[in-house]
Every structure is written in C-alpha cells, then in structure tokens.
Image (cartoon, rainbow, N blue to C red; front, side, top):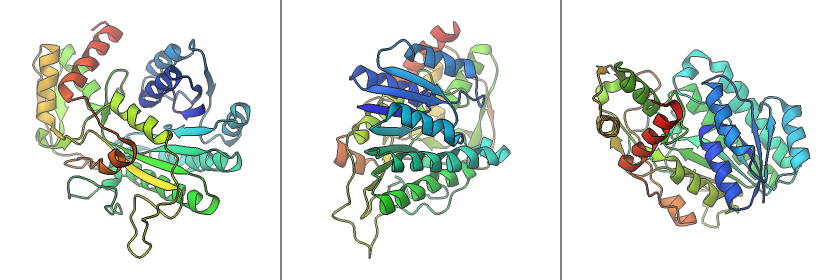
Length: 335
C-alpha cells in the first residue's frame, strides 16, 4: 500500500515507518522537525529512513494546508496514519496556542485532505490523557471522557469528535488510538524514562512527582506499532451492534472506531525507577514532589476491544523494554 505517515521523524512515527517499509509498503513521511525537543534526534531518526527503498519525505506542518495537500496530491496515499501533533501534557499549560494550531487546525486539514482524495482509512493518534479525571480502572473505550484535565487531552478528545463527524457525514473510515505511555529506543527526551536516564548517568537528582506513588500503563514501542498496523489493515465499517438508545463511545453507525492501545499491566513509578537503576547499575537520587497540574494518578488500559477486533496482544514487559532503551541510549549518546 501507499501509506502517508505524519510525524514520521517522531518516536512512534519513525518506528512505524520502518515496519511498513519492511513489509513492502511505500511510505511518505511528513514532519516539520520542530524544536519542541531536540531536532537533531528527529533528524537522526529520519536519516535512518531516508536511504530505504520505498521511503520519501516532505518537510511541512499540518497547519500549512497547501503543503499538506501538495503532499497528498504528489503521493496519492491509500491510507494515512496521523501521528503528528503538539505533544506533552505539561507544555500545554505554557503554550496552549500550539495545541490548537497543530492538533485542531492541523487535524482538520488532514481530515479534509483524506475526504477529498478518497483515502481508504485514516488512523490517528489519540491519547490516554482523554480519560482525565476518571478514576475507574482500567480505562475502557466505553467510558465517558468528558472531564479532561489538560488542553492537550481536550485537543485529543476533539480529534475523536472531528473524526466521527467526517465518518458520519462523508463515510471516511477513521480509527482513533488512545496511546498509553509509550517508551523504548529512539524515545522522546521530554518523557520520564529519558529524563531519568540522563540525570542518573550524570549523577544528578531526578524529579519524582506524586512522591512516586502513581502508576502508568507503560507500553513498549514495538507493541504500539504492532497495534497501529493491525488497525491500519482493518478498515472499519458501521458497527452492526451499535444502539443509538445506548450509544457506545468506541463505535458508531458510521465507519468509526476508537481503541485503547496499552500494555494492560500498570507499573508503579517507583518500580519503574528500580528497573532503570538495575539496567544502569546506578542508584537514583530522588526529589520527591507533589503531583503536577494536568497529571493523573494512575492509568491502565482495557485493551479487550482491540484484542477482539485485531488480535492485539502486547508482549514486552518493563524489564525487557527498559533494558533495550538503556542499550540504545548508551550507544546513541556514548553514555
């Protein structure tokens, strides 16, 4: 297939592009290589993709409608995976406009490009952050998600609503994936594992919020990519079981689905740090701090819907996943 991947120089996007190319798909990567975090890391990911047969790249932003439409017209994708977005919960408290530009205006441009060019299936990144103030665990796609606690979360919930509108009005098949705390080699420097590793190796203390008492459904990047590809290959149709008198938020009478994509095995943050200490052979100095605004205490993904519909079965525990990350980090940074 011809697959357009936005955010192809990003953490998940670069891994996904490799997997699609390995199985014989053509991939057009689209990314603006912005400086939200170190652009040299994004360029390094991209440099691994550029020599590969079947890969092409266009530099551009989702907000740049003309550039995005030109990429669609030049490549004529059959399917699209939209992973480009302004990421980060905490940054959304500092720079809210970036989230509207990329995650709302940019996503509208993606929907319009898909609609007018007959794209067979749009898969897009949502986030576990949409569960916000929910406390019932595990989080299930059947749950209400009307209480976001950050603008980032609100923008991702908005993406799901916008996608449903296009599925309903124009018959565009869309699938939203609520990612749960993705980690692994080539990861994002603003995420905890990266920050912890850098500081521990430098002999600096690490900031541990909520005094380390919260838990996260840490999901290894290879398991995430497996789930993305399984959903990409399964174009949704109207749900024959959908009942408008008792609506299921995860499906619709339109060709629309939303899934959780996580490990379904939450891990206490303090245990995560212990595993990292073992892999690094060093102890961490911890600054134990209260929970930050916009954060939630615990996450856990109910992945039953994704397992039922695609056979998704995450296989990587944190002991193995953190070890692989540390090996990559030491090699990449010669640390």
